[in-house]
Image (tube, rainbow, N blue to C red; front, side, top):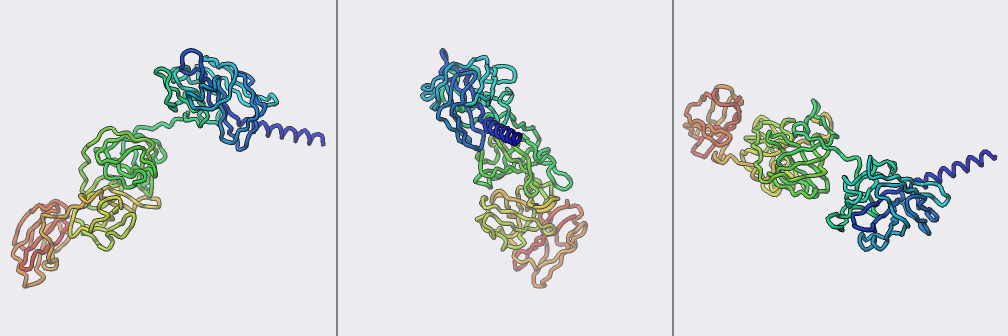
Length: 477
């Protein structure tokens, strides 16, 4: 029974010591920047436990003289003792209790003991070695020193930094920096952002998985498109090689208003959302404005190579016009160039969302996207027009009046294209061939046309009849 009593007493003592050990010295101002007698020296303690702590009878056993009286500290609360409580209130607007003595500029031992004389916390600070010094802005430069992490060993100098929180009060040219009575703002384990090209940042493996996912990167590029996430940020950054990456921040624009043509530098973490490579920014800096956007690449299909690049899909027509305008946050609509069908994504933050569907044939420019919920990320490619100007009707070709007047074969074609009249009363004595950009290439009355010299692509054959104009689209292989 005696041994059990000893064990219980030991466990109670250890439990009490664990609780006590969570009262932590977190900030010290030992040499404020004022001239003459220092009036803004202070020590801050913090309750890092999950329990209310009764500090009655606790005291500083080394460094300064102060005994706590009728003091309880709730979890997460701070308490400040200072050499001049009137100066603390009038200059730094901070309430504090008065200690006797002064802190040594070169460093000294500060010990906190409980009411039983047990040492609870020890900080043997210095102004050299691993400790912040005047070179970092403390020791007369204006900054207190702050503990980066309340769970770290506060008797290790590398776990402290010179305070960076501006208090808006100056002594000569030096501003007071600190957080007396509040949470510290300093960070010891600074995140390093590795400079990367957009090509490297957006590189994927054979299954479409981002190779550098989880890395912290610094990238530069030109803003393309509008912000399609007004509550935060969502746009695309593209470099001079038309290599791009998505930029996304859920609810914070980081002080940046999206303007197409801005040259910006972003620091953030790399990740992937439904197959789309993204950087989640923590900082954005504006380097220049009014830069030219890249020239779009002409494509006939979408894939991994078009993701976050500016591309133009030529000779498109809407497959099902009922898809246009069918969503609230945006909608998907399929368009075809005769051989390939792709998905346009019209976001509700672009002007196209409230506009009518385009008629007839058009070229559409936009930023390549992807929405593939499962790895491998090799499907779900989309094209996102930025604004109405990205859809360009083939205006140099007269409107279609009757598509059933003529037929062409074969389609696609390599060498000889043959056309015939389907309705006898429609007299067609010649046809014209146009490129998708509206350039007329040839006029002929021959019903067999040699197209072997045409470059591969999509073309229009136009026939004028007594009832109007008829066009047919064909693909040159």
